[in-house]
Length: 292
Image (cartoon, rainbow, N blue to C red; front, side, top):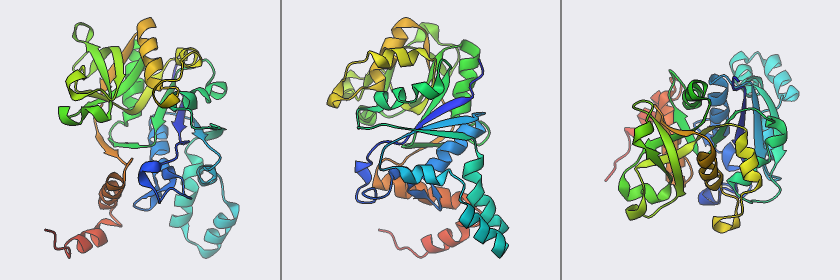
């Protein structure tokens, strides 16, 4: 079945980038001049997704507003003849069909994904997490996973190789070399969340892009709270891999982690330098800096 639906989780508190997120959802913090979550939605749309479900919380109304039409602003820009600004304002609401569900309490990523079940139904779907922005213009990361799913019919997890000394920051997969489909596609045997360096089963870290068969919902329904008293997606993936094939795909592209202040600032700078209209001014400023 072709994948037309995706879930984007946006219910977290963003505590790692406080105080910026005290009143502003972390997903709305800008990279250059565009909210982070718009880049995530653009990746989904560019991957062939036509229906996006956001999982939000009561403090994330700004996310819903951003992807809604704003007739008053549209009217002002039309009257002023500012066509370029009008196109950029209209773009988010035109990316896909949007729906929103709420996670009433911070009960874990697995619980957030489960909240989308009534909208997704019994279909395979994509899942995108907002802390990771991945750039690969020829073929977006989610599209790469969808291609593997269409070849195998299985769930697919995006992974990347990371140095052993930082492996404890990530979820990590155990793979079966005997069932490697190609140079980038591995059969998953198990997943472990943030292992100690000496206990890590591989250097393949899980990054926030997934394609799931609908069976993941059945397993999330019966997943007991794990670390931190939360329902962990990792636990459900482990159970899924015991019941049906799950693959890890070493994606192509550049991944930006915006989950902490340094990552947010450096990513914003990188995105500004990619823009023809912003790069000259940014470069001119950088040349004035005297760095130690």
